[in-house]
Image 1 (cartoon, rainbow, N blue to C red):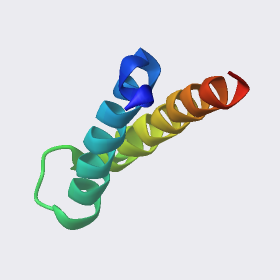
Image 2 (spheres, rainbow, N blue to C red; image 1 turned 180 degrees about the vertical axis):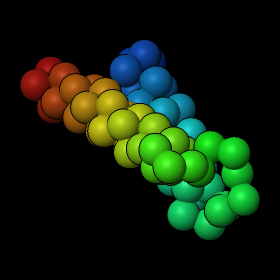
Image 3 (cartoon, rainbow, N blue to C red; image 1 turned 180 degrees about the horizontal axis):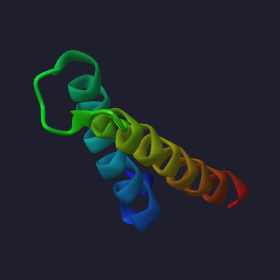
Length: 67
């Protein structure tokens, strides 16, 4: 429960859930207008959001381990 008071943890969880949905969509939906010659936008956006969520969660957990 102590993590729920930290906004970084909540933001990290939100971006984790959205990134997993985008990565799943990027792998399994191939008839989307977002998959063209430039690549799979859902997959690339999901990977970027997954990286951001990992940074937010790591910052939140590191802050709680110090105190």
